Length: 393
Picture (tube, rainbow, N blue to C red):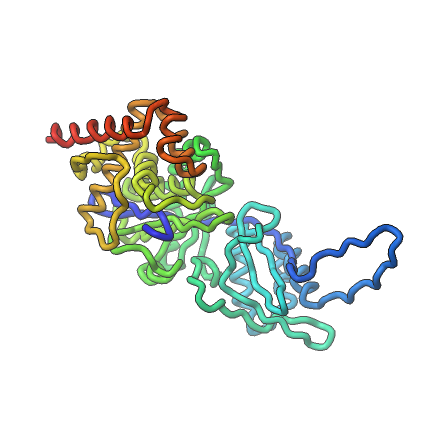
């Protein structure tokens, strides 16, 4: 799918997953760079302290040390509940948050597990209003930035559960699913960590969100297709969020497959931009990871498989039906399985890394890893897949 990755179809159903964070806040002003004064030059008088920056800096330090009273101190009473919820959410997510002040406007940027957010980090879709009351600056408003799709956690109204490797957040209506999802996701993360190492993309922690029917249509613009039950939302340098619709996941095994699939996307492609024409490989490797430890012939992919003439299949068209989706995912699954069968898992995953993360051409990645032109690899694996279709019972 364009714009996000990882919708997952399993045995006629479709699946996905949830989120986590760490705290430190920095005041940054791109319009006020530090000046360098040559030695011996006259020293300019110090600029008066900006009350807005003082307020934000104080809140940053309070959030970093887990001081709720300090965080709420400069907030107008009408906003206390909203800011208290935001504090709880940011702490649960272990978020690194930068307050940026530019031309009088204040907005929030966020990232995860870094001491400071990169300049191109995503923005929380909220902008606080700060007013001067006498000698004191006070936060009097918090509004959404127009045109930005809602993130799962910006309202601060989620409940969270922490696992060894995952943080899972959910609306209160789904809090009863948290224990189950955390247990399943921690098991899945142990598998995904192995593939993140192959991709040279180790994850400090995985973030997963559970969506209700209503929030499924809202979070990140509600852009999932009709057949999707989950997706991975890329966040550039902030990594990736995983969102799932648990109402459509009726068994623990289905939940495990979808979580493992979606975290497989995080492990293999978070932090990079993939080509739309690589959808076969993006989804194929996620299916391979998601179905572990079962092999492709042991999964529903065997029944959905169709005869093919090439493994680098064209992307799914918009509006594709469920049978076409299932066949596409199955073919991608078997394509990656063929690479593993022919060349071993380590070399197959290196091919994935070179193509998806390093941007090598299929030809260069194939010659570098397999020592053969990609056309030969493509032809060989397409024949292997078609033979399975012919012999399928």
